[in-house]
Length: 298
Image 1 (cartoon, rainbow, N blue to C red):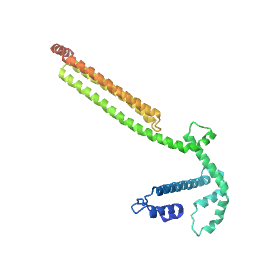
Image 2: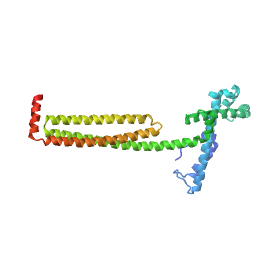
Image 3: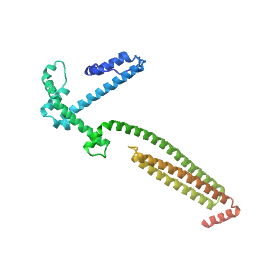
Image 4: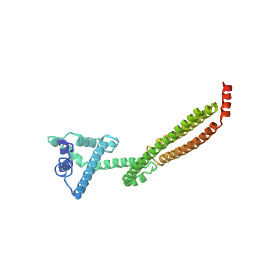
């Protein structure tokens, strides 16, 4: 169900009070499900919500700007006496008994609205230019930035949409990279197992030494490839805050690199298996030679 709203809040916001009462008494049933089936009614309600949100945003923005021109950097735009009047008008607690006492202050506030409006307009313009400088860091001309303010909401929405799409694509690339990494590790594990199997079956010092050397070489190749890949990932992570084309390209290059590494390991595996088979077929002469070599080495 809708959360309860204090009566003080409803009294201070009559438009919101009317909307809240309309929702709780006419639009929604006790289960917070809509009691209207007409799509036209839903459209009207959606438009009303949008209107109230816009009005609430304007009120909050006006409240902050009034505080800015009285306390912040914009306080120099208005005389000190007028700043005190504004501060008293917007922050002083009000009761029905206080209204006669504040009537003169409120009258002065209303009389000064043109001057206050100019100060707020100038403050809003400065804030808008600051936002435009953030959105368009390459543009330094204030006139050019001011001309882009009307396009800023559309540009911001487009950038957010692009960011979400790039984030989704990056997640897909990470999943693909994880799969390729598992395949590379599986190929390395298979190569190591075959090397150990042939080493034990050959029972020769030279074959064992060669198998160990091959395993170490394969391990170092995988380590080197892994380090190179990690550097690529670190570079991508350094720029992932904006998810630009450079990050996506780096991850794509890393994916290609992992595929090449897997292909090289499979080719090396076949070569090692062939060499080990030739040593195994050498017969007793090769075994005797290995035994004499082992005796000399001891």
